[in-house]
Image (tube, rainbow, N blue to C red):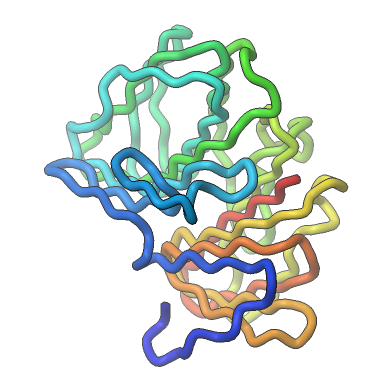
Length: 250
């Protein structure tokens, strides 16, 4: 959290995953922060949030990456923050993910893929796993660039509306780079009617989450995540380059 700011009393139903409290894995080429339990890191209190199972903030060294490995029955989303990542999979796709692009894979009955940084500089990405509504689906792949500015840009939508990519779960995902000091309402009018949970993840910068009902504002820093019941709230950037993801889930 921001130095010198006291932890406010959290309203009922709200959880705050501070960046420094996430699980951390580091080897010679991978520096990874895990919001939820992952790999050798296990905490029954942090197994996910609704259908949101994994948020890994990965920095991969140049020339390194994950060799071919399997997945099944999971919606896997990669948000490229910086650099590039080369993708290959058993469905025949071979692509380069660039900064600003988003990749969505439905692992379904099973896929094998690799993710290698063949660029000259380290790359940074958020890998997100969302549990699908149904298992045994046909595997699928999609990749798309998004221009993100000062208003909520839809990245995922269960019906692929608003220029977003489709996903096999009633989940919506937005990204925004808000202007400093301007309160930005959360886009609840665009959320699924059944949405009851929100998760806010700060990719970069600093922000303040203002909740309805007179609760104290929540100060957020890079890497912080907040889970809360769906309801009226506003987000205010407190630093240049603030970059935010917002999930709405049933």
